[in-house]
Every structure is written in C-alpha cells, then in structure tokens.
Length: 313
Image (cartoon, one colour):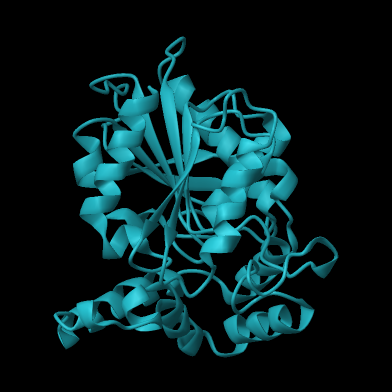
C-alpha cells in the first residue's frame, strides 16, 4: 500500500492508500475495487490487517477522510455530508486516472464510514457501487422515542444532548483519557472480556492500545467534537431505504457502541426500500468480537469480504 493525495472541490488536500501504484497510471489486475472508509478519529491505517489479503484479489483503496490521518485538517467541513462530498471527489479522481475505464466498486464503511456511504446514497444515489458492506454502525445514534428507537437500538454511550455534550468535552478537555476510552469501547476483548481472550498477552493488549491511540492523536479534538455532534444527530434510516445494491451488515456481538438490534435495522430498511428483490441481497453477519471486528477477527473478516465481492461482481 502506498499513500497518494488529491484535492477536494474546496481545495482541501486528502490522502488515501492504494494497493496499485498510480504512476504513470494505475494498472490493476482487474476491474474490481474494494474501497475502505474508516471510523471516527481513525484512518485508513485501521485496516493494515486486511489490505494485504484483499489486494491479492482486487485493487484496494483506503481513504483518510477530511480531518483524519494524513488528510488535511481543515477549519470547517465537520459534517457527514461534507465527507460524502469528499468521497464523490475521490471517486472522480480515481476515474480520472484511467479515463473511460469502468470499475466494480465494493464499498466497506466502518462506523462513521457507513454513515458517509448512507449520506452519499441520499445525495448522489448508489449507481457508482456494486455492493456495500457496513461494519458495526446503526442508522441513528441518538435515541428517538417517538419512533421506538430507544436504548436497545441507539448508541450505547452517546445518545442524546447531555451525553453528546459530555463526549464533546472529553475529546477537547481530556483527549488522552478519551483515546484510551475509545479503545475500551471498540475492542470486544476489552469491552466485554470472555474466556476466549485469555490467550491475549499483556504485550498484545498494550500494542493494540498504543496503535489505535496514536491514530486518534493525529486528529484535532475540537474539530472531532463538532463532527461528533453532526454524526450523533444524523438519522440515516430513510437513506438506508434508498439503497438498491447488495448489502452486508457486519456486526460485533461484543461491540461497545451498538447492539445487534440497532444494526439489524439497516438490513430491514434495505429490504423494505426501493431496491428490487432485496430480501436475498441484504444480510447480516455477526462476529464474536467488538466494534473493530476487522482487527480482532481479520481472517474471518477478509474471507467474508472476498466472498461478498466475488458473489456480486
């Protein structure tokens, strides 16, 4: 994987990783692309355990979204819709490298990465994509008791104005503590330890913590706090009904962020949306790990991604 950059339509420089060299022009082994979008305060470096295996089959791309990783940390742009617009600019950039070339793009959105794809679909449709994989994200983080969206479906820790303001304060005022808290929520063996985790050494646990906190540390806490407010309140339930492409929801049974019931809503919304014959094209796969299931169960994750890509291309 190598890093490259491009300019969004507002001039912001965004970075991404590519498994195929892009100079003088990309020459992928086939027309298959697997595109990764990472979670809140993350980067494309989240997927280091996934890129090598998947790049044997497809051209793998990992975008560092605005304000994350190696992308520019703009003053504004802390809205999911802006990140969706950046994704559109990214796809235009990829197509500009080989004018006239068409690709079969499988999009993998993890956490807020899934929200970006739902927003993209709401704004621009899903014609650019062959299929979707949404990794451990419910379509609404806030509770909405008017429509039976309670603690069983909403985000476990950030679900209303009070909890959102507390989370914002944590990212701004206690960043180091918050980075570690994120790891505790997102790794299943830390959020909900079980007997199967006994083999994890103290060294492995410390390495995981250092790896993920170092990625979060690159971000600006005040900018993240503003993005968090937009992300938490954004209701994507109706947007999920606009999806017309095969959809696989990958959920962590020990996720510290969402319940299985909340994530299952995505499948039901896609099935009952405007897509044709979506009953067989919208599915859910439950992992025995947490929010970062791609890290804790990489072999299974990679296999299921490859099977999904091959099934629908």
